Image 1 (tube, rainbow, N blue to C red):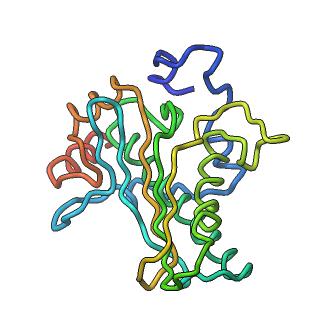
Image 2 (image 1 turned 180 degrees about the horizontal axis):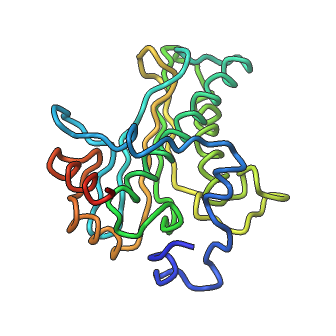
Length: 218
């Protein structure tokens, strides 16, 4: 398990017994590479992750999908697939956000998931499928971190529920995509402080910090 997770506040009877990366491999989630996914914040006005010293990690939303949603089963499925794709992308982002600085943390150090918000694009005032579209995101998140709606659950039960989260799923937005989710997770405060003290609280990295972590990998 994670270096910081093992000594976290979670009591032994509630700790995950599985390696998150084993599930990621079984789900064929591509985690990319340091070279392509650890980038500079230069010129950017928004960060992908903000780490707070309390242990909360805030992941910015990302929009994706074929376009507006409406209450048709096939269209809802397209939205769910887009939401799952975004979850995979955020898992990759969080992986590099936790590991790039060499502080010793990784996805196994996610203690639990706090809150997700899904903004579903639809100008149809009668649209009622926002939560169903967002399920594509939530269920993939549970598949990786644990939860009764994930792919590794049996009869609604999993070894861990660290992927289950409070959630809002709202339709009625405009945009040339289908859904934009965002999510907040909890990591051990000791890991958050180590990240902040080593390379700052934001990811992607400020240019000087990118140079620093890249040099440290050499």
